[in-house]
Image 1: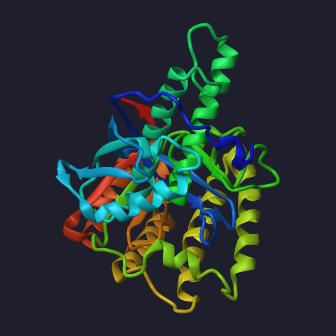
Image 2: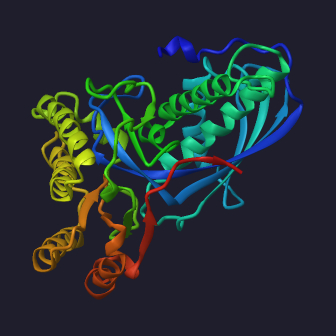
Length: 377
């Protein structure tokens, strides 16, 4: 698909008012995306596990207004009005208005909440922007039905094959829009594994939206768990946007982009054959490479904390002593994601409680598992 496939025609008729609610999870990349070009396109492909419990639930309420060429919206987080979020949403709406021409015809009330604690150190941009994008595409679907226009509005007269194609387009458009709000948000709509960015060996992969990983996955990887150790719940010293932009002119950028492509090729075989040791090697190397790129950019910066390193070394020691198949990965921050097969849950949780919680801020961590993606509520 190409960009023009997502451009919408103006609507002559509008729904006077209504609401829709969607939940969408966060995700954790196994092969990392770091570096982008406009408009929000990745310099290298990435692949991620979709999470289950760490999600955002967003209700979009809309009421028709005069189209004065302006956006009109209010944002609430956990019932509290958040005007400081308005700039981010206004930027998002400006980016997507060609694909959602109804935006200026409505006043929106955006009510959102996260299932993970506020200021927990877990980035909510992926889950939040994907949930909002789903709500907007759901509204567009209703408008297409009202205006009797071709699109992804499915009625009961359609064959199951046709309806499946329309539902597929719905998810692709929502992922396409979510990407324009936050790049990694396009990986949060489906699961359990999602690829974003074109890769020669993955048919259907594209820079425009995330797609479900299309190949066989060994049973070893079907019940993975993720415990997120909250090392630092403060605001990051460098935003992800600034970090991505520092890849422009980075002395190691081009080799990093090639490495990510190679790692996805390797991971494709690993996921099929069930080689957990090779999986661990790829995932941990990717996490450390991400932070190596931060430490070698200009200006350079370090987002890991001393306790991040203590956790990593403790994981390595535990794995060497016990033969456990747990491993770590990191996002662009200090927190540590501990990934492990479901059959090791009790052993790993005992290890975390006995040895790792001391490195977490106030002893906080969140248990999660691999999920299947977003859903309408």
